[in-house]
Structures are given as C-alpha cells and as structure tokens.
Amino acid sequence: MRSEQRLEVDYITLCELDKCCIASWQDVLGVAVFSTDVVAATPGNMPIACVGTRPLGRDAAVCEIWRASGPFQTGTTGPVKYRTNGHVAFGYISLQESVNAGATGKNVALGQAIERAYADMFACLREIGIPNILRMWNYLPEINLITGGVERYRQFNEGRQNAFRSFNREIKGMVPAACALGSEPGGPMVIYFIAGVGRGLPIENPRQIPAYDYPPQYGACSPTFARGMVSLATRSPLLFLSGTSSIFGHETVHVGDVVSQTRETITNIHKVIEQANRSVGTVAFSLEQMKFKVYLRRQEDLDRVVNELGALLGSAAHILYLKADICRSDLLVEIEAAGASTQCRAC
Image (cartoon, rainbow, N blue to C red):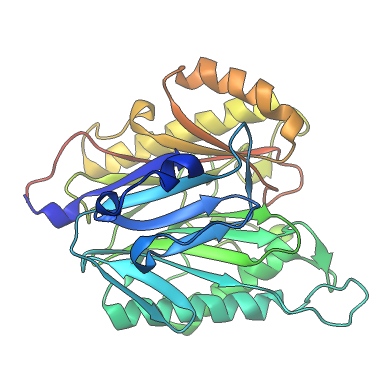
C-alpha cells in the first residue's frame, strides 16, 4: 500500500494544539481554526485557515486538522497558501473585503472578489499539478445581507460560477462537495479546500434536486457543488458530505422548527451515504464512521439540537458545533461530515 494515500481529519481544541510538539506536525496537511480570536502561528509555515466562526461550548477555539503522509511541500502562489505531498493538497485564501461609499457601507462587488479568489485557487492548483478540487469550504461575513439589491450568497454563487467557467471547469455533474456559511461581520472571507491528483465521484441525493439545477428563484446562478464527493485519492475511499440542510426537492421544509429541520437533515445525510455506497459498489460508508460539523444560526437552539443528534447518531458521535448563518435565511441548522471507508482499495 502507498502511504501517501492516507487522509484523515481530527477536531482538537486550541489548548491541545498548543501542547503539540514539533514532531506531531510531521503528518499535518493543513489546519482550519474556528474562533473569533487571534490565533498564533503554527510550526513550519503550516497553512492555517483562520475562520471567524465561533465554537458553541466551552472552548474559545477548535482546530480542524487534516492529516496525510509526507514528505510535504509548503508554499504560496499569489494569495493562496498550500501544502501538498504530490498526491493531495490543502490550501486556503483569506480576503478582507474593501468598503465603498455606498449607503450600506458594504462592497457591492462581492461577486468579482469571489471570482478573483477562485481564479487564484485554480491557478495555484494548476501550478502545483493537483488539479481536482474534492471539497471546498466557504465562509462569508453576513451571507444573507442584501447589498446592491442582491443577497450576498447569490453574489457569491455568481462569482464562483464565473470562475468555474473561465477556467473551463464543469458547473454541473463533476463539481466538488462544498458548503457556504456566514462568518462574523467585519472579518475576512475565508475559503479552504482539499484537492487531489485524480478525480473523485460526485454524489447526489435522490430526495433533492441537484443544487446546480435549482430553479431561477434561487438566483441568477445556481450553486456549483455536489451533495457529496467520494475521494479515490486515498488508501481507503473518503466521503466528503457537503453542507446539508432541511431541503426536500429544492424547498426548505419545517420552517421555524429546528428539531424537525435537524431530523430532515439527517435523513438527507442517510440518502447521500446510501448513494455513495452505490457508487463504490459496496457498503463502504456509514454514519458511525463520520465526523460532523454542525452549524447553528441561533445559539439558543444548541441544547435541542445536541439532544436530537444524540438520539439520532448516538452519544459516541464526533460532532463539532459552530455558530454561523446558513445560506438560506429560513434554515436554522446545517450539517457536514467526512469519513473514510473501513475497506481499503487495492493499491
């Protein structure tokens, strides 16, 4: 088996991160830190995406650690910082929006900023020879705010799709898993990704219309992402579950009821996992293997969602809870996940 095909994710607190010795960073591909506080640099110029999204609970900061097998090359291409072992790559970009003199005080050219950011990421991946984005995370301050008559999430979708088109990337079908969340006002836009040499298997949910086929009522450009992605760039297939919410078909269901939205979201996650197993031709993935990130619009919903997920997923489930706005203003909860199969492919 080829050691470079390993890819795993862990969630640790900032205190645990501070206790890590230099040796423990030898297998780290990249880091995302969720906190509204300033975070110290990591050893060896490690790429660390600092996301202005607050953990819900006792910890002021939580780290998402992606581990693979080295040796690694760490570098910067334009504004993109990355780390790769030649087989998979982690990278990120952080942008502080400019402010114009408009009545809202917000930059109405968000779409152009996103288009430029994605273009920079695509150019970086082309340069390092890791062309296939498997998973993207997008954190955008005030994602539901309307500026220039258009919601910022819709401006984001337009900029993202324009960049995909400009680089001759597909906007339907073979698109990455992704999420887009609202981070703290005034902070930077942060986008991070995992990419691979080979293409993955995009997964859709039969209970939902693919996001890239949404009707025009959701904006001039549909969201460019798949409901899930199976990475075959690893020793064991890895399933990335995109941000998943209480949507049936293309419509939000259970408006105003966070417990029912949580149940509906887990139902959708079940279906994506089932489809992933069909795609690889075996029962490779299950809820028990997944590590989850749960985003809540309202902090006061935490106890109810914790109780509901305890009943649905069991007390042993690995779950990180974060405070964030969801891409639709009527959605109260969004859940994403990642997990490797227990079955190894022949290498």
